[in-house]
Amino acid sequence: MTAASFVIPVMILFIISWGLYKRVDVFSEFAKGAAENLITCAELLPTLIALITAVGMFRASGAEGLIIGAVSGLFDKIGFPAECLPLALIRPVSGSGALAVYESLLEDIGPDSFAGRVASVMLGSTETTFYTLAVYYGAVGIKKTRHTLAASLAGDMTGFIVSVLTVNIFFGQI
Image (cartoon, rainbow, N blue to C red; front, side):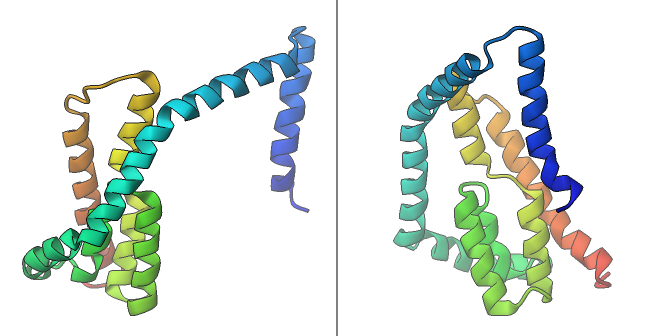
């Protein structure tokens, strides 16, 4: 066993000990927090179901393929691997969908290919924007995202572009 395997048990023991020291009923506070989180989960469930359904419909309808076919030539000219376009489209919407696209991409072209490396950096440096907005804004009841969506998508786009540049710099393409 390593020292890292003791971190969680030590933290739990510390929290319980601190609660006892401060004369707090640790179990009832834990139960109250768990109940509040179950309510939050129930409130977020419809949003998550709608998001998962929309992703499934987008992929099943063929819209993803149409978009990729329309812009792949342009992206090839600027050095962005066309194999990574499905990942760039699905990543802002679904983390699990992006992971499935990523795994199939690595199976098809390999992890040591240029596109495989770009996809790896891309997956680690971008966010599931729509999911994050739905969960966090939904949890606190914010209905209007104002400029958050545009700023987040600009951050994702920056992550996509910098992924290509990073792989080029670190693996000798530039």
